[in-house]
Length: 155
Image 1 (cartoon, rainbow, N blue to C red):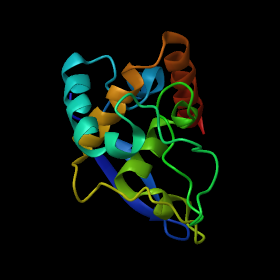
Image 2 (image 1 turned 90 degrees about the vertical axis):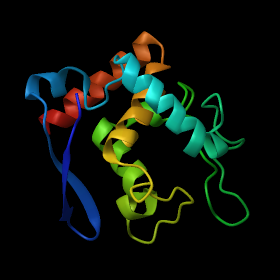
Image 3 (image 1 turned 180 degrees about the vertical axis):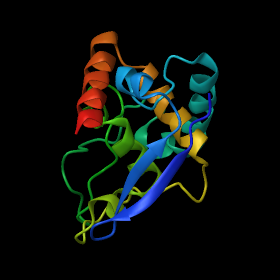
Image 4 (image 1 turned 90 degrees about the horizontal axis):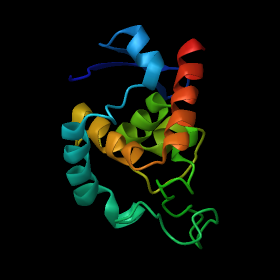
């Protein structure tokens, strides 16, 4: 299944996701990411290796000292494995960060080396790479993330 997104400016430069074409029931059950689809996960693994692994690590381990700002004031790339905070964020937010970059999403002069990949990857590539990441999480972490998606969908 391919997912499509509509975007709209909300507030002071923050972008919000306003829709996707899937049933509300399906979205509430697991979120936006096709992490149980082996074709999407395999495609996402390739995209991750090509565009993400250089910073976030070939094994999703992130950069050392990722919680401490470097000498230039930037936070190193966080891990996407269960030791990181990726699973703390709902799918919509992960999609937006990946597409537009952290600076755009956070706003207010926040600085990050995580630039958006919307000019490089299409929406399906972004969903697939995020699905690949989620597919590596142990069951309880993925289920916790599904619960976060359900909470986000209700708000």
